[in-house]
Length: 75
Image (cartoon, rainbow, N blue to C red; front, side):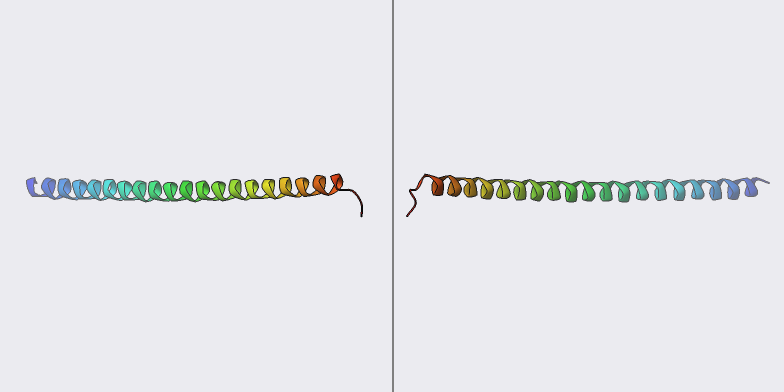
């Protein structure tokens, strides 16, 4: 009877350790994926803001060229 209890306890402890290890691994993988996604979104937002700044500067240059052309006397 004592041997059966030891085997049962061993199987239970092995199963518990396996489950805890698996859960920890999945949590680590999920955290790594979350960090990678946040980094990607951050980079995309940075690129979007840079593109917006470039467009804004191009529009301002275009406005300056248009107003400069209006101030010139016709030829």
